[in-house]
Length: 343
Image (cartoon, rainbow, N blue to C red):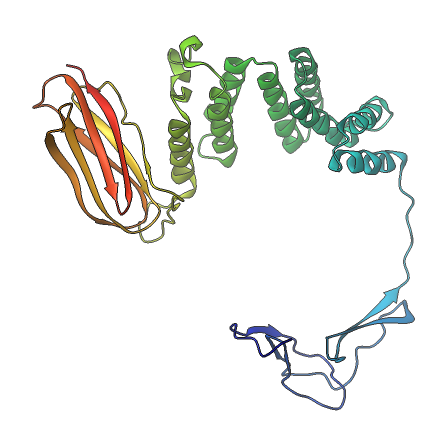
């Protein structure tokens, strides 16, 4: 060390330890250690422990702790466990082809269904990473569905059913998958399972071309995604609704990381629309409406606001149909977007 640290000290409680004949309040670098009360003798060797000990010392040679060896029975790994260890090594080092081959061997082995679950899950993940065909995921979906119907374990059944539905996403059966996620939402209201299923449905909807989608018809219309910003807003609303608190005093707001002005919704509108924006820092905020010629129509916001997510309603009942501009100014951030009033 070149000199004493200027950082605030960190405290560590090491009470009831033995430190030889000297009890002292030492400071190891930037660490304040609190020893009181302290032990008057070293820790006894544990029952069944060996005579060998591992002494842990700090940079000054002071003994911090002692670890003794303890006898124990060394269990032999099963063939399935050894195969998983080898497969995981290939998987984690990026050799997905070799990993998949071993996972396939585990699936074809005499291991129990429960022992095979991790191999099936890895097969799904590798399929996503390597862009496998729809047929690949179709077979997986059917397998997961069969396994789910054969297990009595409630948690395993839910996991397998979710993997079956996710495999339908891999098949590009997007709307079928969304319908299955929605069934989970309907059958498990106000649960974390429903929250994750709803987010899965929205994430799947991102993959659908809006022009080709039939989501806007019927009960699945709520999952229709218009843009990535729309997706972020909907996920944020789901998380706030489930994990947030109705009490403003206890509610923990998710603070945005950047200034953002979102597209108004609905658009076109008649006569009311909602404008949302994010503030990562406390800012002086102006939100102004202009007509297409640049004339100021209305100032919706002109005040200092804390960091957070905001939404403002704009009522254009007194205005004529046409294109209007809304502009957000917050500190050095300026952003403008168009909206259409259609009466």
